[in-house]
Length: 623
Image (tube, rainbow, N blue to C red; front, top):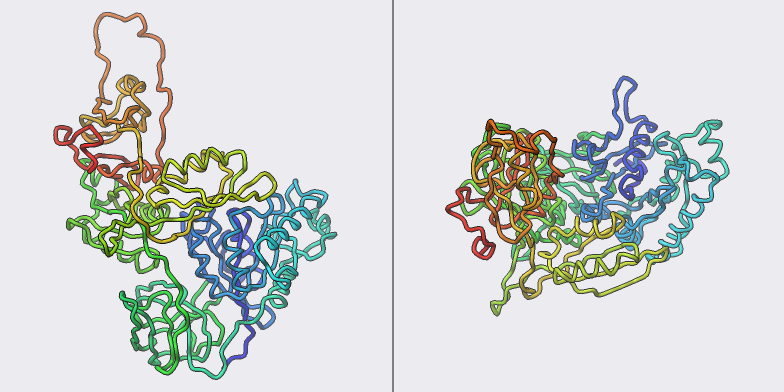
């Protein structure tokens, strides 16, 4: 068996603090790429959505070789909406690099993940990035950020060993770092050259080797899943003990829906390990390494793969159950097929099933009709990312409003999921935010000053109350607030929560919108469309200022007469149009409305298009 030294670590950072850029230069300086290879920036952000939004959505593994050691690195999401994925990945690692912006300091975004890493006993390496920013000239701000980070470690309950963390100062985009604070000005000015070698050395020195169980057979906890068109479902995890070979028969120790243990044997069809950005076939596993095993189509996160039936399973990873469901449907609008492929129900079903195999946070159910399907997940952003991916593949589809998944108690009581929202925000907005959450049945349970004019609020709120709340919260905090949520369990139904207090402006005919017609509707509410846009009967063109729906004619043209009116010559234009993104549409729609998504357009429409078949009163159209 190989005795190659191993290190498994992840990178924790706030959005846009340079995490993916740092990994780029680690790969390049470790000799991962050949001289003839053309390498783009942010190679770990493989999804188009990641590149456009500048955030990491999916955690990805890579591995580099340095001085005879293999270092497995996980580039983890920094956005709060993907914190659950980060938390799961921490189980495969023995340490972490905490990346902090030298000007912005440790932002609350990293608090949740850092706390989990510290609680698991991980050793942390602090890397203060972007020391070449103008705000850091003189070094005073850099020292202040280091002190703030130390205070954060103390606040999160770090032990003495974790508090004695090594500190490196880096400019990731230029590919250098240093442990010498006094050398920063010279390196920023280019008078002294540097590399990321001090960071590699810190990984080998301060991150411990994987803990392994000696004298046991093969044992691996499945921490993540992937899917291959060639060998099917892939189980990803760290080898705790023993080893296996390709074609060897091993056992999956899992649980069924009732929670009872099950044992299922299967042959290892493929055995892979990470080298750079690639998965390469290996003949035998290395204890402590992160590997990929193919052969079981039923393996789940939390299962333990063992070499024989005498080996006991490891403690399971608790995967949170979905709390939201959203209906995906074939596009049935009058404009179907004009901007993309009018996807058939069979194709839509196959596409959703493929996504569920790759994303363990999602589940699939057949809908009430053959052309509708339900996808179960944990948040609105998960659904928005999935819909955006499908539309970019050239397909058209419709999606409904995310629905909360209820449960029924033994006595027949209706139970709904409750979540704890942890809010980090400037103290001046605390009153406004508290009132906002109380309107959605939220209860304030904790108020903690965080220093530097910030506070932390903990609010218990029904999952229903969180739908559409993120944008309202960011507006209330002027973009300076952070919100993370945690499922607490199920409690009795909390009563009606007003989702949307206004109705819709709905086109009563087909045609193209006309500026003259839209101008006459401006005092009725807020328009979503400008002139020259194709519309059809039942399509939503704006938000009504009152609580009922209003059928209107956006295609009305000015009558042509031979009598010139007094104001005919002056130029008039629309006051303003609210452009609705996919996320905003998901937050805005009601139960009787669809979002029609095509490769070129996002439209809102009623489920029942003819106006003579639907009521404009909310009490009659929402059941």
